[in-house]
Length: 483
Image 1 (spheres, rainbow, N blue to C red):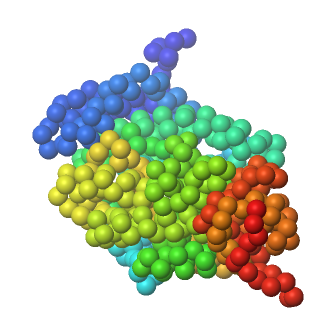
Image 2: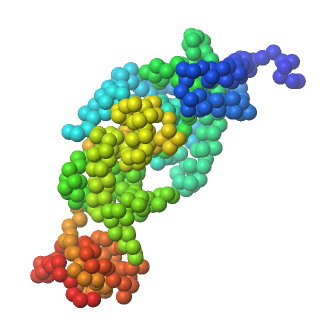
Image 3: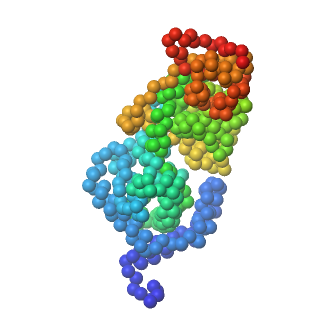
């Protein structure tokens, strides 16, 4: 029997409601986008709704499941109460051994998220950026590598739902787990996209919102934009948790941070900014990007050649301490040009030329104005969130002992610097300072293993090599033998 000849059930009625509203929204958006009050770049974004009309509508089962999820969420939230001043995840159900989570934000936590906060002597998260900052603070401290958060790229703080793959254990590797999550998220994203389009169409009649709609609307009540639900429909994205990423960095960073802070102080840079290395790589000494950036500060080749040695098996971008000197000089230049640390730090990601263009385009040098009003093609999610993510890392590291009690404390490395007065073979250095290949590579990650293992390879005049502090009875010296 065809569906059209049957009396519709409540599930089918709900499906008909979502489908009709969603299609109505698609029909009406073309005219809305033509309105002159919409900035052109956003109008182009919204116009994608028309091109997405080929998407399959959600099934009645999916819609009923979504509404049931909200009922479960409300019941679980009632059990834990509404007095906490911090948001926390609640488990809703399991789908293909993947846990579905909603983020519960009690009223006190929701209000607190929007308040300015002092993070350090030199850095604060102002109210205008506070919610964005709190999103990244949770990504770095609450969500781990087994959690994937679906949220909105335009309003990052709006968490739609999250996926927990920890139940899969070691049966699947990280790539396979990620692929499985993405397949599930693709279906969920389509469901939420239609839901947001329906909310946009009903924006003047929120009393008609379903429980699932009301949950999403509650998480967006701080956003005054009339088109917020339309924007939400097309800015759904996945963000993997970074807690494990930060924890791993904490096993390496303390070895180098005292020396790095000395480099930043020498350039007159606030020492808190040394923590940008956590945003860039979390002190992964072997970090390399697809565009050629390298080292813990992810320095591009052009910048590296300007400030560091890069030739014949030497790439000082890969030495955290030497690279920090280049990072500090670049940040100092950015600050001189932009006049503020929020812009200077954002320029570290986006380029100072791009920041100057953004300032000119919006007529403001406030970071929040660039985030909200600048729609340059290259000023994407990473650039918009770079400063907020830095603040999130800074706050996370400030609370390191409470958040990462399982990470052992690591002592700084101690070394002496030897500046070569003439070209010198690595073999001669090994003999002079009683070094092994492993020790040289450990203290000098800017040297390639091939170079260090070679019997004949030389280091150039003026190169500074780090060697361990000599044992008692072995005199320290900065002079080296003839090669």
